[in-house]
Image 1 (cartoon, rainbow, N blue to C red):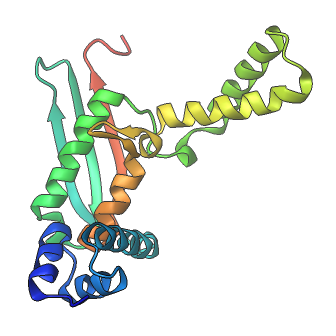
Image 2 (cartoon, rainbow, N blue to C red):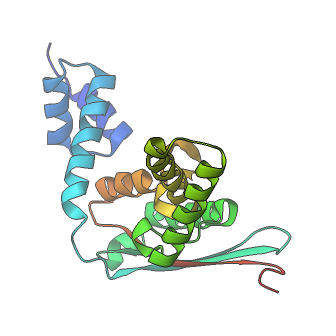
Length: 199
């Protein structure tokens, strides 16, 4: 099948990928538009993984106060250059993440930040519950491991289902934006305030 300029243009507008990448994707997939989009997305995510180790020291601080002023969030989102930090796409991502944090109430950015004593306490509770329910000793460890995974998914921002698309995690959304913007994007830290909390 002949790949026309119009086909390349349409794919480029849909994905934001470069002209040569769009042409190659269309050639690889025999002109199939949906397959070409998937090809570019996979390629972009693979390249994004390579960028994850690069230093991200630029970025912005995003603040969000939920209507009614009962919940507020401050987020530091980093990227590699000031140029990307000023783009509309990066700013929209920062805003969406503050909305997510306000709604989903994560306690940590990633599982690596969860203190060891918190993990051990959760493990102890899950083990005790499983034994009290009369579960056999040989399956208790699997039950505890499963419950710990669910715990991490509920308290770690990167592992939570993204509030605007629950089929993707926050980490997947960050990787997609890393691929889209061409720079490593990192949630450095956040603080969530809720009126009356901790009193």
